[in-house]
Length: 284
Image (cartoon, rainbow, N blue to C red):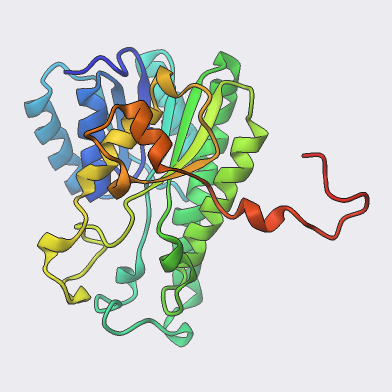
């Protein structure tokens, strides 16, 4: 077991799914305590069984949490602090994809008339508002201890901007934008905010078989572990406001070299450099 995150406590949302499961495993392997949250109780039970078999002495708690419910998010954060003493890391991974509208959404893109308003609201509530809820619930504690890591899992820019991928794409675009804004808001506080994405279609239940390529050619969820674990460590203390494509993180390099080679600014900061603004532009 690595000791990179020894003594740290992390919350992982959407922990029972493909990416969430490998992140829980990777964080436990790195020595962290983990609070794994999801709304799928059966999958959470399976996750708990598998993780305790693999990491019998691990500090792992599995919780049913709907991130769209702010009160539930507050209770999750408070429970993590009560159980482990502190909270250091928040990984906003929970998400709903187009599959809840129609399974064959890759081969037949989804039109606006297929999206019922309640489905739009639910996906946005989980993918975008849910990350805000968890961040809002945790930030006071993180700022008070002057140490925190927030990792937001978004998606490729292609998916964000693609027609027929609503509301998944726009909700992730909102999360990406919020990530950059929060990185600026918390700058200098000891709390960093970064974005990590797989880089393309990933071998999880989010991607149906109708994508048209063998599943063996999809990105493995495990590529997310190396960049996220390192970004959650003390070594990444001043690194914030960035986006990392996990499939491009070169594990043959040192983590520091891989980070530099893989780093890009989160969101679209270049588009905000020339606003029509009295005096030029805001000082911050």
